[in-house]
Image (cartoon, rainbow, N blue to C red; front, side, top):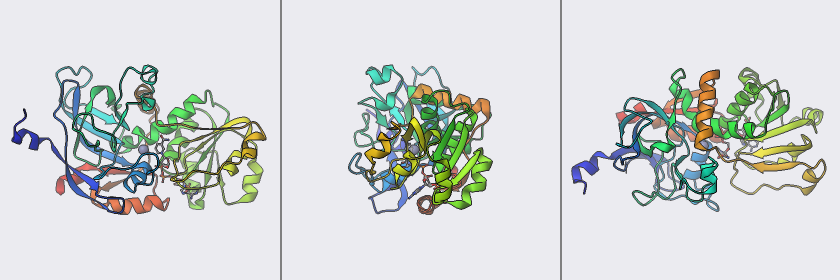
Length: 360
Ligand code: NAP
Ligand code: ZN
């Protein structure tokens, strides 16, 4: 039995939402004691993913309803402060990452294939049943977290940590489908939406040698898109530009967070080509069968990536010096940041400096 004093020591400051309509505000959450296989991490930076906003506002209620209080955050970079005695890979002082997953059964076909995100018993970093403490898991808008070492990632030493945090979700979510679609070197690849995921998609598509084209609804992002590595930029509201590229893409990665006409982008694909949805708008999208039938086109989806591939992605980023373009913010401005995220105004990911939580 833990004494009362020891339990109190495992309390962590965090920002939580009390309901779908409440702003995020200072709270305290219980973290578990560090078990044999656990790593306790002091969080240094946490990215703001649009999934955090969808979850906090319960926009995915029909698929994954939100339990309150909700502490979001699954783009975590921090420093190890304590390890359990069976931990072999990490020591106090190491700089590590945690993404969207913190547990899985390790024995189902998905886990055996290193795609733990599809394990029927996986635990997501927040808003997932907590097997240790009951209730739900609490994410990275917090000063610390305790995670099984199998779900802790090694962060390359040469990268800026505020810019690394978004790799743990936006990075792997775009890296994984682009890799899965095979050798895209020299292929014409589209990225729809230049936000957190989209700007990482551009960096990876370019690094993999694709002729990379951004579709954006925001004309003011054109120069940034080119600077980030795009070869061409299409303003999606310009029907002449859209017409000129119709039927010409080998692959499209769709990162849009809101309702939009996917048929328009299916029309951009060449024969037998594929569009992958990683964006997860609240409401179902209307897909015209004709947009798929003519040209025998494919529409599919992709969910983050497994732990092995996430480590591979981080190592790739270390080798190629790839990080996210971030605006570092104190946690006290997180609610304003959400409003700017909704306005597609972020360039291109908010990264919360968790030192700001110490001031509370
Ligand atoms: P984000 O930073 O807000 O970027 C989304 C971008 O979509 C915006 O910057 C904007 O780009 C475009 N957009 C927004 N509203 C639009 C509209 N009404 N019509 C057309 N385009 C619009 O969001 P994010 O963090 O990258 O996340 C994107 C989506 O992916 C979210 O739904 C998120 O939940 C989901 N997600 C999925 C996974 C997964 O595993 N599948 C993982 C993480 C996130 P422009 O200004 O360039 O048009
Ligand atoms: Zn995310």
